[in-house]
Length: 104
Image (cartoon, rainbow, N blue to C red):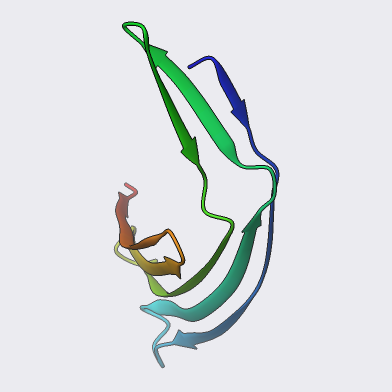
Protein backbone atom coordinates (compact mmCIF):
# COMPACT_ATOMS: atom_id res chain seq x y z
CA UNK A 1 0.00 0.00 0.00
CA UNK A 2 1.50 3.27 -1.08
CA UNK A 3 -0.80 5.85 0.40
CA UNK A 4 -3.79 5.99 2.70
CA UNK A 5 -5.52 9.04 4.15
CA UNK A 6 -8.16 8.71 6.81
CA UNK A 7 -9.75 10.97 9.40
CA UNK A 8 -12.97 9.76 10.93
CA UNK A 9 -15.43 10.79 13.59
CA UNK A 10 -18.16 8.93 15.42
CA UNK A 11 -21.05 9.93 17.65
CA UNK A 12 -23.49 7.54 19.25
CA UNK A 13 -25.42 6.35 22.25
CA UNK A 14 -25.82 3.11 24.18
CA UNK A 15 -28.73 2.07 26.38
CA UNK A 16 -28.26 -0.83 28.74
CA UNK A 17 -29.83 -2.79 31.53
CA UNK A 18 -28.13 -4.89 34.20
CA UNK A 19 -30.01 -7.86 35.65
CA UNK A 20 -29.00 -10.06 38.57
CA UNK A 21 -30.60 -13.32 39.61
CA UNK A 22 -32.21 -13.39 43.06
CA UNK A 23 -29.61 -15.82 44.39
CA UNK A 24 -26.78 -13.83 42.78
CA UNK A 25 -25.72 -16.83 40.72
CA UNK A 26 -25.86 -14.92 37.43
CA UNK A 27 -25.47 -11.35 36.17
CA UNK A 28 -26.44 -10.13 32.73
CA UNK A 29 -25.94 -6.85 30.88
CA UNK A 30 -28.05 -6.17 27.79
CA UNK A 31 -27.44 -3.18 25.54
CA UNK A 32 -28.70 -1.46 22.39
CA UNK A 33 -26.51 1.01 20.54
CA UNK A 34 -26.66 3.37 17.57
CA UNK A 35 -24.02 5.61 15.99
CA UNK A 36 -23.26 7.82 13.02
CA UNK A 37 -19.75 7.61 11.53
CA UNK A 38 -18.15 10.18 9.22
CA UNK A 39 -15.02 9.61 7.13
CA UNK A 40 -13.58 12.95 6.00
CA UNK A 41 -10.69 12.67 3.46
CA UNK A 42 -10.95 8.89 3.10
CA UNK A 43 -9.14 7.36 0.12
CA UNK A 44 -6.58 4.61 -0.29
CA UNK A 45 -4.15 3.69 -3.03
CA UNK A 46 -2.27 0.41 -3.47
CA UNK A 47 0.17 -0.63 -6.18
CA UNK A 48 0.32 -4.36 -6.97
CA UNK A 49 2.47 -5.76 -9.83
CA UNK A 50 2.47 -2.38 -11.56
CA UNK A 51 -1.32 -1.99 -11.27
CA UNK A 52 -2.59 0.91 -9.16
CA UNK A 53 -5.80 0.31 -7.23
CA UNK A 54 -7.64 3.27 -5.72
CA UNK A 55 -10.63 3.22 -3.41
CA UNK A 56 -12.69 5.97 -1.79
CA UNK A 57 -13.84 5.09 1.69
CA UNK A 58 -17.55 5.49 2.55
CA UNK A 59 -18.23 9.02 3.77
CA UNK A 60 -21.18 8.57 6.15
CA UNK A 61 -22.35 5.31 7.66
CA UNK A 62 -24.80 4.43 10.40
CA UNK A 63 -24.49 1.52 12.79
CA UNK A 64 -27.08 -0.14 15.00
CA UNK A 65 -26.40 -3.03 17.31
CA UNK A 66 -27.24 -5.08 20.34
CA UNK A 67 -25.39 -7.31 22.73
CA UNK A 68 -25.46 -9.31 25.91
CA UNK A 69 -22.85 -10.19 28.54
CA UNK A 70 -23.69 -12.96 30.99
CA UNK A 71 -21.51 -13.81 34.00
CA UNK A 72 -21.81 -16.87 36.21
CA UNK A 73 -19.53 -15.88 39.12
CA UNK A 74 -20.04 -19.07 41.13
CA UNK A 75 -19.16 -21.25 38.15
CA UNK A 76 -16.27 -19.01 37.06
CA UNK A 77 -17.56 -18.46 33.55
CA UNK A 78 -18.89 -15.69 31.38
CA UNK A 79 -19.78 -15.17 27.76
CA UNK A 80 -20.54 -12.26 25.48
CA UNK A 81 -22.29 -11.79 22.14
CA UNK A 82 -22.48 -8.55 20.16
CA UNK A 83 -23.97 -7.92 16.69
CA UNK A 84 -23.94 -4.76 14.57
CA UNK A 85 -25.55 -3.74 11.29
CA UNK A 86 -23.81 -1.03 9.24
CA UNK A 87 -25.58 0.86 6.46
CA UNK A 88 -24.73 3.79 4.24
CA UNK A 89 -24.33 4.90 0.63
CA UNK A 90 -21.35 2.64 -0.05
CA UNK A 91 -21.42 0.31 2.96
CA UNK A 92 -23.85 -2.35 4.05
CA UNK A 93 -23.09 -5.31 6.27
CA UNK A 94 -23.47 -7.30 9.44
CA UNK A 95 -20.77 -8.11 11.97
CA UNK A 96 -20.89 -10.24 15.08
CA UNK A 97 -18.45 -11.08 17.84
CA UNK A 98 -18.62 -13.48 20.72
CA UNK A 99 -16.49 -14.83 23.48
CA UNK A 100 -16.30 -17.31 26.34
CA UNK A 101 -14.21 -16.94 29.48
CA UNK A 102 -13.62 -19.66 32.06
CA UNK A 103 -11.78 -19.04 35.34
CA UNK A 104 -10.67 -21.74 37.75
